[in-house]
Length: 381
Ligand code: SF4
Ligand code: SF4
Image (cartoon, rainbow, N blue to C red; front, side, top):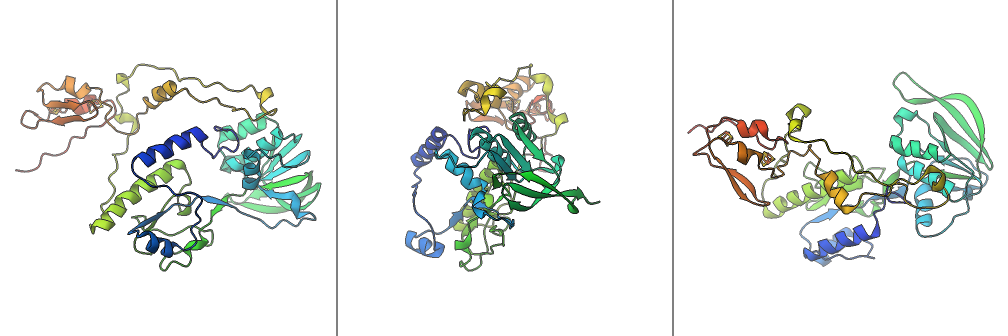
């Protein structure tokens, strides 16, 4: 729970600063406006191209026979109501159905709301759970009990009937016909989320799958010319990193499309391999520690469990990243070149090679600590 409850939200101050930064770039931001008819919006706004990036906010449901369906709630609504200051009545025993980070958050939140017993029911094994291991460990540390290889068959509060599962030869869970009874006053469903993309079904050419995801080409364009999509609503890993990447890729392709250019293949840094890093360049530097709340104080409130890095410590930690292959202006190549063929262009502007002086000895390439230099064959004259 990096940002408190629920964990998928960024702190308000970070969001506000980001919005302000985007506004200063000249981007007009409209909020509180629901898009129902994309084509009408396009016409009225005079937009030549559109990028749609709705997230995945609709909780997946599963049909659980229950005498009182009101005691089955979805995790997103539950977490949202807690985040907005409400205290939903959940009783003393809470069962959460699912094995992702949202399930862990819901169970840990239930403990903070006073549930003596918070248990998770997940149909696969611990090794197969989508939740991060540290989230599961923290949940267990806070008293959450995790029941692996179980599915919920019926809920007749407080009786919760679960079926034991076993893995088949391919690693898929299959029912065993063996049942157990657990106890729960509330069941929270945390089975994943779909995207609310119904409004795109009427747009000619846009293909919307049953789970709400939208098909896009390698340029991030949907089947409707000029309508691009990315983020949680397209089939891909649902992480912030992937979402940011989609935005960057779509921006480049929108630019190409509007300019009538053929889409350029995306250029990536060559994959950084461990052997390619010059680790001798760096001295040891201990990881900056973050304050961590004592386990016994956690469930009595919603204080941050991990206090986060100070701005200075965050910059320090970011500086140790070696995987991007980006030059960080260490001047190593500048100092090592025996021919003075490396020319420094100024802070932030990096360097250029003077090929009239360069002999191709490879010294700069060999010593670059992050493999930001490539040796390429000299073009034939
Ligand atoms: S290219 Fe490599 S050696 Fe040269 S300044 Fe950048 S990081 Fe340092
Ligand atoms: S290849 Fe050799 S000569 Fe050329 S820039 Fe690098 S260090 Fe200098």
